[in-house]
Image (cartoon, rainbow, N blue to C red; front, side):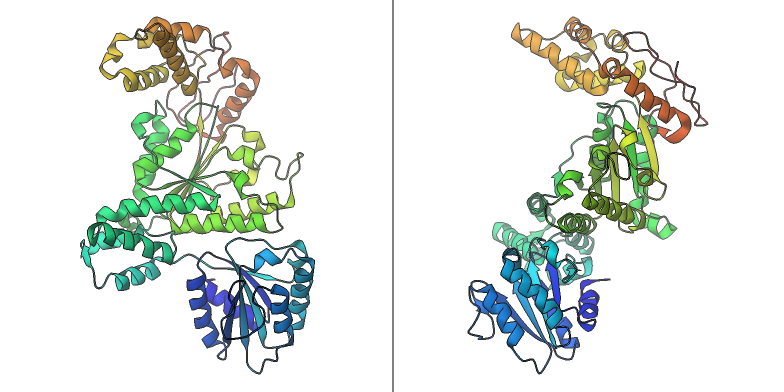
Length: 516
C-alpha cells in the first residue's frame, strides 16, 4: 500500500492524529493536498514553529500549546487537515503530550485531523496507541523519470534514450530536492546534462546514506581476483549475477534473494560481499544491526523501515549485513532479547522472505549458534556457504595475491610453497598480517623483506585455530554435517600447527566425515 492509499484509508477510518517521517516536506504537502482533494475537498492547513499557520490564523506562532488549543476549539463546517511540521520536538512536553492524546479522541467524531511531519521518528510511549504512523516512500522510478524529463526540457541533454534511462535509475534512493540540487550542479559545471554527471549522483548518495546513520555506503574496489580460493562460491556468484539482466526477467527468473556466508574469522567473508558488489556493478550498502536500535518507543522499527526503504529505492544493490550473529544474538534463546530487538528481527526476516525488489543480501556470521534458526531458512537466502580455513593450495594462492600487491614482479623471489606449508591453520587475514610483520621488520633494518622474514613472523604467531581450537572444530563439524555448502572444492586434509586435524574431507555429494 502506497502513502496515497494509506493516508486516504486512515482519514476515512477517522484516525484523528497521524505521524509521518520524511525529509521531503514540500513533496509530502503536495501529495497530501492531492489526497485531500479526493476526500470531499478537505482543506489543508500547515503550521511550523517559526511562521505559525500558513492561512493568516493569528494564534500559534512559536507556541505549540496554543496551536493544539486552537485546533480543539475551532469549529469545522468542512473537513480540515492540520499539518504540523517538526512537531516531534514538543511531544516530550507533558502538557503537549496530554493534549495530543486528548485530541486523538476528541477529533474522531469531528471533521478534523492532525498530521505530524518530522524528519525523525520520536513518539512517546504514551502516544503509541493514539497516533497512526504512516510511511511516505521515496520517489519511484516513474516519478523520477517524469520529474527529470520535465526539469531538463529546456537544457542540453547529451545522451541517448538508453543513457537517459541509466541516468534516471542512478537517482533512485534520493529525494526530489536532492535530484534538483544535483542537476543544478551539473548545469553549473558544464552547461549540460550527461552521463559524466553520474559521479555527482554517486557522491550525493554517499552523503545521503551517511546522514541516515543507518546504512553505510561502501565503494568496493575488491574483485573476484582479490579472493584466494573459494572457487565454488565465486562460480556461484558469477552465475547468480546473470539473473539481474532483462533477459533473465523475460526468461522468468526471480531476482536472487541473497547468500549467508558462515565461517571462521579472517577467512574472507567480508571480502566476498565487496567482490560481489564489484562483480555485479552494484552499489554496496553495509548494515550494522546495532544502528537500527533506538531509545524511543517505535524508533527501532522506524529505522528498520527507513533502511528497507533506502535499500529498495537504490535497487539493484547489494545489502551487506556484517556479523549478523552478533546483531541478533539471543533472539528467542536463553540469552533473552528486548521487545524492540525481536520486532526489528521479525520485520527484517519478513521483508527478506517477501521482497520482490533486486536487493541482494550478503549476511556474514562467525558463530552460527547465535543465529535464530528462522533466519537461515530457505526463501530468505538462496544458499548458505561455509568458508573453511584455507588449504595448502589456497594458502599459496593467498600469499601470491598479497605479495604481488606489494612487490608485483618480485613475487617470484619468494618461496611461496614453503610459506604455504608453514601456515597450516592460518586464516587469510593471518597470512596478510605475517607479511605485514615481515615488512615492518625489514623496513626497520632498511632492506626489503624476504621469505625468511615472513617465516620468522609465522613462527612467532599463534593462529586462532590454536587459540580457539574447540570452537572452530565445532563450527567445522556443524558445516560438515551437510548444513552448509562448501565455498571451496578443495578436498585435501590439513593439520594445525599442533597436529590436530582441522579439515575434513568434503565429498561431492555434500556429506562430510567426522573430525578426528
